[in-house]
Amino acid sequence: MKFYNSVGPNPRMVRIFMSELGVEIPSEDVDIRSGVNRQPEFLKINPAGQCPALVLDDGTVITEITAICEYLDDKAGGTSLIGTTPEERAETRMWTRRVDLNICENLGNGFRYAEGLKMFESRFRCIPEAADGLKALAQDKLTWIDGLLEGKQFLCGDRITMADILMFAFVEFAAMVGQKINPDNKNVVAWFERMKARPSAAA
Image 1: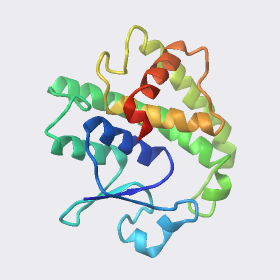
Image 2: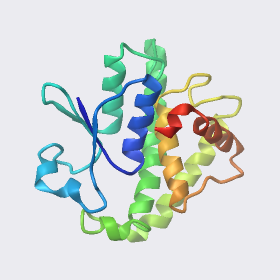
Image 3: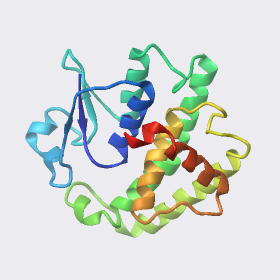
Image 4: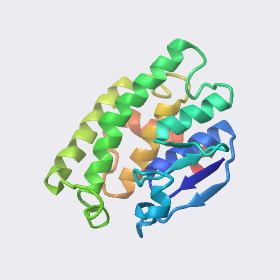
C-alpha cells in the first residue's frame, strides 16, 4: 500500500488513526500549496484532487478520510477505534457524522473562504461572505458538544474512537488559523488536552 500525505487536518486525522492502530504504511508527500494535487498526474490517482489517498496493493484507490480509516480498521481485525459490537460501531459512526457535518465542514470552509482564500479561490467556488457565519456555526456546535462531554473522557464515553480523532485534527488545525477553542467550553478544552497528550498526536 501507499499513502499520499500532505499538510492539513485531513491527512493528519488518518496519520493519528494509523498511529493509534500501530499501522505503518509507506507514504509520499504531496505539495498541495503549490497545487501538485490539481495536476494531471495526481488526478489519475484521485480525480477529486484531494489528499489523502490510499492506494492498495491491487491498485484500488481509497479516498475520503473516514473510508480510509474504516478500511484500515477492518484490515487490522476490528478495534475499539470503531467499535467491537454493532452498538459501539453505530455510536462511533453517529458521532463521526455529527463531528464531520457540524464541526469539520464549518471550520474547514470558514478557513478556505477567509484566511485560505488566496490558495483556494482558483481551485473551486469559494463564498467569502459566508466565512464568518460558518466559523460561528462551528463554535456553536462545539459549545453543544461541550455539554454532551460532561462527565465523559471521550465522545463515546471511556473509549477513544474515530470521531475523537477526526474532531481533534480539525479543532487543532482551526486553532492555528484563527479559530481557537472557546475557553468557556471547559469540557472541550479538557478533552483536547487529553487527545494532545496521547503519543499518536505526534503523528
